[in-house]
Image (cartoon, rainbow over all chains, first blue to last red; front, side):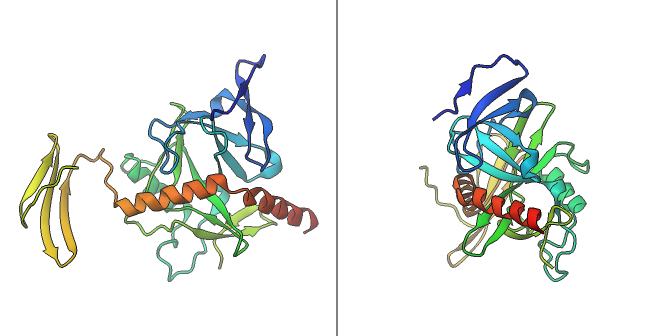
Length: 179
Length: 78
């Protein structure tokens, strides 16, 4: 089911129908926030086009709304919005700061020793039973604004968890790892 | 599905640039050595399935919006 793209008079943006906030709503998307995923995300084989939705009212969350399957909308966090420092020292899987993590992403993305210059997004979800937000550090999504493309990497063998609990610091307005 | 029998030390080639060798067999475990270009993505299959399941659940979760409203409600009152 395709997300209906509505007629609009602004060529540098489009208006789409999104379900990201739990209800269908029309959202204006700048053309620069549209990304093609030549290789589909695992589990979403028919979604190759996504819109990155940002709404300051819901910072720091973003959403990747599928334009090919309107019922799929991935909540994500920019890596910059998550503090990876302060993890328990005994937990080597997550005892990395954001720079180390970004370097690991760059290595898997094929950038060698160079830092990945694109945007790193972490898939987020809410565990209703535990009442906590979780973030996927195992499989970040990388967006390349220069080419308008994205892909999901799997950081196999580096010990990053699929579901890492996050603590919300309302004062800092930033997520971090629980101490 | 193509099924081949190989002994330890034997291998197969996939195309011109990928070689898979049986390094050893221990009970139900088979150790494989894989030589492939760096651009080839090699993953244990169960890992891919875990990420796929997580993506599907994250992309479909309606509870997220409610939880988010709670976070921002806490912001407003805290």
